[in-house]
Image (cartoon, rainbow, N blue to C red; front, side, top):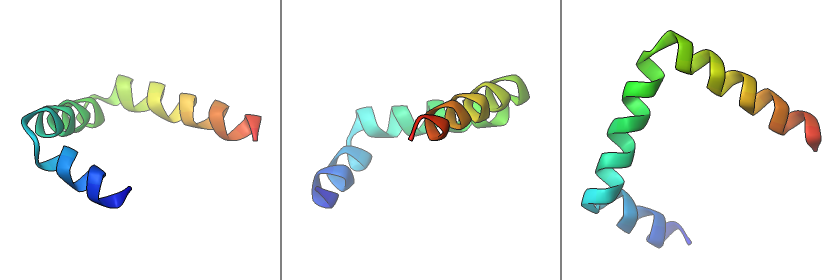
Length: 45
């Protein structure tokens, strides 16, 4: 499983996804949305 994740991270698609995540994390509004979503997901367990 970890090997597949590493392969994805090295691929162009993985790099693109990582860059999108970095940009979203830099945006305060998106950060708030992500935090809210994580809270909801954790609340379900």
